[in-house]
Length: 73
Image (cartoon, rainbow, N blue to C red; front, side, top):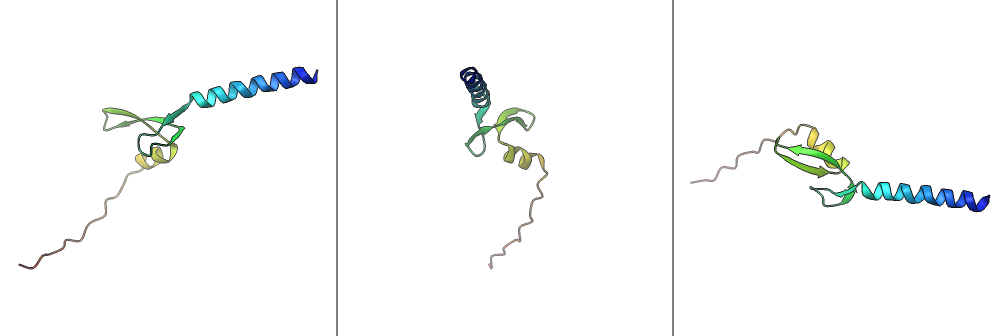
């Protein structure tokens, strides 16, 4: 009985590992291997982004105004 339980657990572990490994992709921005999500850039390009970059891409970014540097003539 213990051997059957162990074999059953090992089979479940193997299936879980295969499922997780199958879901891994390379993030387009940071080039790390992780569980990525599809994201469309500019309504044209489909890329894979990790969770950190998906949240950054979805939040609107406020551009900082640069102070103009005047060069004396």
